[in-house]
Amino acid sequence: MKSLKNYSVPFTGLKLGKHLFEFDINDAFFDEFEYSLVKKANLKCTVELDKQETMLVLSFHIKGTIDANCDRCLSPYPLQMDIKEQQVAKFSEEEADPDEELIILTKNDHDINIAGLVYEYINVAMPFITVCDNVGNTPWCDKEMLDSLNKLTADTEQKEKTDPRWDVLKKLNEK
Image 1 (cartoon, rainbow, N blue to C red):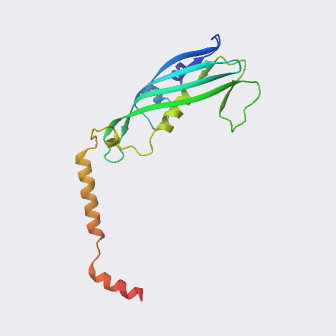
Image 2: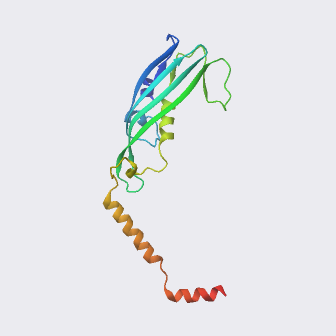
Image 3: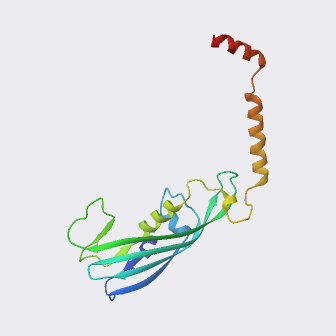
């Protein structure tokens, strides 16, 4: 968890207005999360912090590639990511309503660790089914694997054809 301390945005001492922070999101970042869907990535996270009197508005832009495996042919391919999200942090001594998606900052807070937010944004942006032939016009899918799958599918279809003698018996059962 030590490397996640590098993903802090210090806001104490900053003037009111917008400030830019950049972070590299790579394999070491995802190694810190035990059950991460993503293992290898090369992403750049830009955080624009808009400091106001009573709150901070964090605008995230995460762009780059993630090493993914095609769910169809199992071949690895680079999945392009372009994520834009926003988070509001409010200065208050009161506890937040659990339904609100706010970060509450007290007077003792000096920075915001954004590692959890970045991790969540990336995992939520991952497609449910990753297919490599959706990447531009380049046919990434492994032709040998697809041919093997098509052959297996054809074999199972042939096995599913029934013996014509059973069709006569099925007709007896319907009466």
